[in-house]
Image (tube, rainbow, N blue to C red; front, side, top):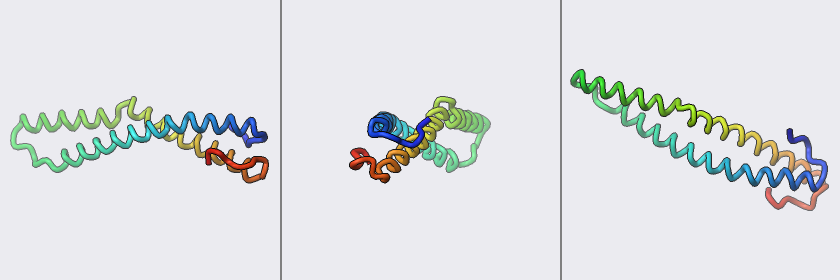
Length: 113
């Protein structure tokens, strides 16, 4: 969708798309890092629990593990991860296209990179 840049106007459009989506990427990345850190912490706590001493404790532990798995495999969470990966690839591509254009000497330099 974003072939090599061939003009200053096209470069400006690519840079505008980059700037717009870079903000979204950073927000998503921060949100995902926070959620993943919480999940890792919860998993560490769950694995460090002593074995259940009663049937009731075993049931509670099983329920907590199910809830943990549900959160880790939540479609909304997985969609955000996929969107973040997509944006990372798209931004990398846009940046490369702009840098190639700039390196050809067709531009006076990059404002964004």
